[in-house]
Image: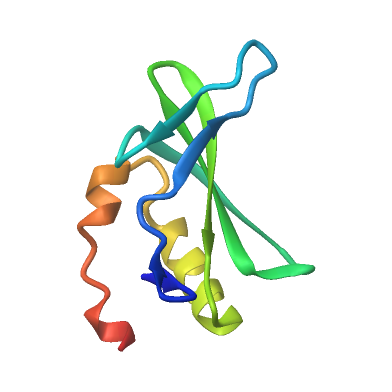
Length: 94
């Protein structure tokens, strides 16, 4: 998956608590939730837990319809590891 020609997986993970600002990279944690907003139809936000801390990442897409499809697909993977999700075969979307 790409946004403006740049790979968007895995997203950069930013801690969502006020304790400290931690940024992580890689296929880490477990997916807790995905969120889309009508005003940001090209973005899908992923909320994860990693080592008992909460993080958020953002997937951006050139195509709003494809973004919505990915968002809907990820709903089935809530509770799965981000590594598992990274191994999903998306060739059917081509």
